Image 1 (cartoon, rainbow, N blue to C red):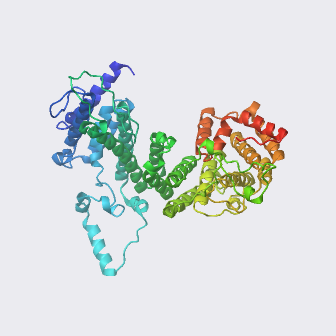
Image 2 (image 1 turned 30 degrees about the vertical axis):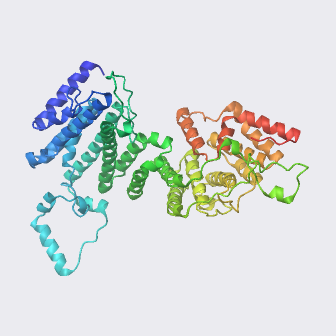
Image 3 (image 1 turned 120 degrees about the vertical axis):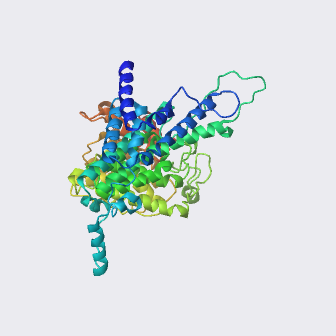
Amino acid sequence: MSFQTQTTNFGLCTISDQSLAPDAFLLVLDSESDTKDVLIGKGPLTVIRQLSGRARRFTQAVRKAEGHLKRLGDENERERARLWADLAKTARKQEVWDVCRVASRFCLLYDDGRWKNPSASPSRSSPKLERAKTSEGKEKEDEEKKTGRATVSQGPSVDLVAAPLYDKDLIRILAEVNFIQGEALVHLLRTEGVQLNDQPIPPEDKSKHPKGYVAKKPEEDPDWIEYCDWISYLSETSTASFLQGLSLGLELNEAWLVCSAVAYIWNYNNHVLTQNRHREIIETLQTVLDGMKKVGHAGETIMLVNICNALAFGLLKPWLPPKEEPAMAVVAAASPSPRDKSPRSRAKPVTATGKPKATVTISPDAMPDLKKAIEVCEYAMRVTNGCSPTDVVPVCVRTLVLQTWVLAKQMAQQQISKSCSADDEGSTKTQRQMTRAIIATEMLCLSKNDIMEFKDTLSISEIAKIVEECQWPDQFIELQLWSRLTYMAYLARAHDLVMHCSQKALRFATSGTVTKGKNSEAQISMIHKLCSNSWDSQLLVLFLHLPFHFSLITLSTLTGRPETI
């Protein structure tokens, strides 16, 4: 969009908004003006002082909108709310972001419960709703008190069916404007060089200072603290807007609104998840999952599974034992030398430093989180078990939640049956076999991490047979399983299985793993998630250096001398 077009659109939107709120609109719009500074106190005008002044100006300006409805009254409230919403949508479409934020702010002043069914949301009922009760409604209440009978409440989503269609349409509009405001605030954060739920990085001060000037540390500078608080406020407000839109979708019992809120939260917090900061948004993830459980996921099963896996991993993460460094690789599988064949020396696994391995203990305080993680994973597994054909997801998506489930069961000291819970799968034999292969492989690999050894773990040869019998729609998952089985067979000194599994994996060296006709970028993104979700650092090294390791394994098999990976 050209600069001239943007200027024209800004002028039209500003004129329209000013006609609706002539007393406050321009004052609130000045919150993002670069021509006005609010600086308090004396001192050099540093970069950090300029940032704090911007934050202070924004905070003072947006307060002007709070009393707008008190000054205006309730006259033509529905029409005004619709006009503000239309202006917010138009500004969003034209990418006039500052006007979009201000219009959304004024529109959402009407999101105070005035058009909600009181029985559906007693906590959000406004005084106006109480005054709006008709005499007929009061007579009905008196009659119920006399007869001792009361209408049975069916929850918010059912009670709102009795709400007027006109009001329901306004509630739906308010939900959409909440999404627009959340997105517009994310854009404001990005103009500050910050992502949602991130903290800003202190800027480099290149200005000249007088002799003897001593710079303050950012964490001790009141101006920098004020700016960081403002950035945190923007992130919190943006997330609250998305969640408020989700709440309105729940009250309307409309799954598409709930799923829209989930999509916004997932997309704008993707960097948080890739940085393994799941715990920071654990409450938000729990809220959106509860919402999807309540009204359904509108066919967005992949998104539901991703939310479940992120929430479950976030619950597990604080209790995960520290990862072993590559230098501490386990050499327990190496056969003893001819000089040392005593049973005692063979019974004690040692690390690369020669010290005995210590048993990993999970704190008892972790049990509530572990049980919750298991419940979340099992919910996703039930939804995608194949009983409902519309809820079947790609195996690469389901693999993540299956791996998290096995890890949660192990940390909670819960055994998994030999059937690998595949008996609960739907009628699809292919999916049942794939589930069993994935879970059995994960159980075999995790049994080596000293948290708990699964008693009913299948042997490597049995798992290899199951993997071979499966018809894999995603070749990367098949490669992953063959690679892990190759590594486990190498540790067990099962040379025949090493050669068999490695040959199965090396078939993809020429053909690749990207399925024809599929979006390669989406599949590569899923590969990164699978690799980052792998808890075994040795396995990740094997993925990255597959040909080298197969050469090493073959060499050790031919020479009879064990090599450490």
